[in-house]
Image (cartoon, rainbow, N blue to C red; front, top):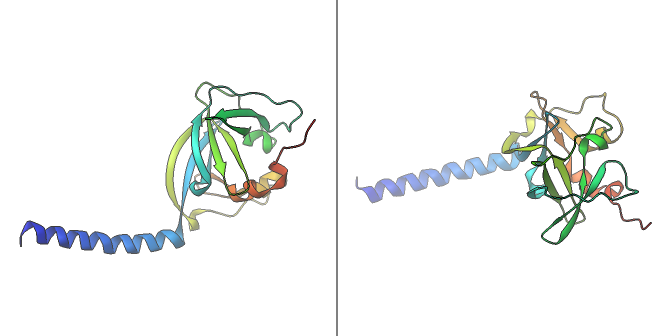
Length: 172
C-alpha cells in the first residue's frame, strides 16, 4: 500500500468519525464560554457571544439599575456592562485592570457581562447540566439555566437577551 492509498483511507475514516461526532454534538452537547466572577465559575452558551473585550475605560451612567455598572465603547459601538453579582443581589466585584467584557448578542439585543477572567470555551454534555436549585428566586431563577456538579453556573443567555427588563432606554 502506497502513501496515497493510506492518506485516502485516513481521510475517509476522519470524515466518517466527523459525521458521527457532529451528529452527537447537535443532540447531546453545547459549547460554552467559562468565566469567573469573585472566584465563582459561570458560563454562557458560546453561540450568544459576539466577542470578549478587555475593559479599558468604563463610563458610569447615573439613574440606571445598580447591576448596570456603566457603558463601554468597542470600536464605536456602545455596550451596557452588567455585573451578574449585582443582578443577583450578591456582593459585586470591582472593575480591575484585567477585567473583561463578554459581549452577548442576538437579533434583538446586545450587552456585556463583566468578568474577572475568562477560562475558555469548552464542550459540555447537556445531561451534565442539573436543574436549578429550588432555593433560587427572582432573577437568579429566571437567568440561570442550571449548574454542573463542579458548581459551574450556566447562565441562560437566551432569556437574558430577550428579556425587556434588560433594556435600559428611558430618557431622563
